[in-house]
Image (cartoon, rainbow, N blue to C red):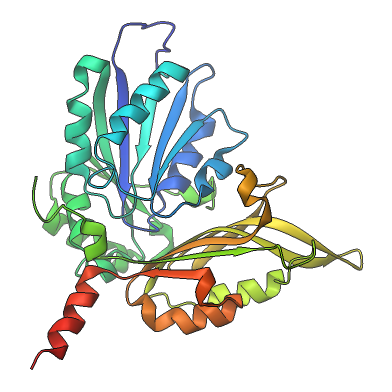
Length: 340
């Protein structure tokens, strides 16, 4: 790899990581950081639903500069803003490479088109890499048009979590992927060892596939000790549906006993299809308004309305502290059912 000091006028290569919710994109990217040569400047442009900046916190302490684009998707809602974000990273860091991590339900093609349109601004599309979750791919490929598009429009397919399925199951997953994309190279990867953690069909496609729940609860009415114990929260996470709840991520203060005293600790929670990590962070959230936050979590999946009561009971929250955004297809289906 050549650094920016070696090639000052060369276009900046942009590598796009895509993959469905919970596939392990962030884990793979973070696992690659120790292999980056010294002096090689790398930036990450992270796109996610909700307004919880989890991944920039996970990357803190590394040499990776992270910028997050929230509350929308680069391929539809945030079209145009990606150009501004890339230009800002170029002006601020002059990186040797930029990695774009898309939201879990993003179409790669519009993003690739936007990058190619920025050739005169000094950017070039390096490659599109799709991360496939070998445990859950067969479960959502039939219900998600996006997952199929991600497997089709790509230069490389990374088979993540392959070590957690049998050889027979892996063969079946590869067969399903080959039905969508025969020629693209497929590579096994084990990110968990390094880090645990326009077509009218494209328009607002997220609302057609994914329900979204956002939970925000302040700690104004509590003491400095969080009312949530780590054990209670882990029990709640383990009770969530593996089939309907694809992704849960955010921040939460948890209490546990230490030297016969109760202490509260801020954790990053990362949950995908029944597997989760709780990462303690020794600092407050970046935004001063977040200093009073007790819980700030985003949940993504299907038929989440059926799980509302369980989530409210498990987190001890009321209707004012939880917001549900239903996928359009659910609303349409219920409308049809009501017709005579």
